Image (cartoon, rainbow over all chains, first blue to last red; front, side, top):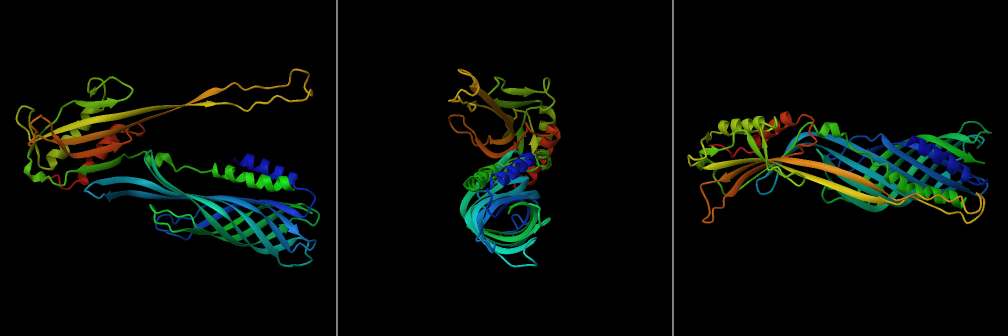
Length: 204
Length: 208
């Protein structure tokens, strides 16, 4: 998987034409904020990548596309569930959530220093998200899949490694709100906060 | 520029394919135990039962065998002994089949074998130009078949009510325990024994 992502990173970076833009790929750590009794553990299995193009020569605004995925997992020790009608089921199990999204985003960049290496920004992304809520026990799974609207405010910073270098680092925090619901697992929506860090390829 | 945008958008399906799976080994070290019973039955009114000694039933869609016997498998005897031990602990008394027992205990394994086949047509192309030589340069991938199989099974323990036999000789299942998956179990005998214990623990109404 890593190899494919590196190839994609280099490939999309190379595709970008000689306009002011950047392509990034980040490791994404997320914290669920909704129904944390079901899954409350921090997710370290996530990634986000995107392409953003600056508008105007001052590089104060950019627009782009971001795609992401995150996997939340929590092991639940053996438990007995009483069923309506007198039955009972005993098992240990995993609750897990797979979340993926694609948003169109816009960013505003705050001036810092001489404006050649550090680019702090704040922005928002709006798009669509998919959340799969799944319970796995023994070889069996129960799953509820949901698509919905995804909104993601985000603040971060781009750090160019050198004034003449195209490679840079990126770090950001974000908050995701998604209307993906699950009646079976008691989710009216899905919210999470996240921290992302990674590399970017600048084109200017 | 446009291609970069399109590439980013096209990555979304790729990301969807990244969905990980939980640690199977953690889940396979014990069976799922499900029990059900007839809530109209007062199990205190039953006192005796009969059960086979070294044979359990086998229901499978891939085998004509209908029983598992101790001479061919080490599985039946410890499973049956565990069921007997739990019934005795619950206060029931084992008797012979001809001694008019109140309950008959059925123990069997249900095996479900599924085979899926999918025909895959690889990408193929024939260049419309002569760059690789006139009449050549094309590659054709022949279709091939991917075969997937799954083999799952449950251990089932049932209590049949012999006190209430219908005129056409039918009996009713008044308690059932379903434990799976026995085919993926790491130590199937040990896990089956533990599952049987659990089935009785979560059925406290089974006491005489």
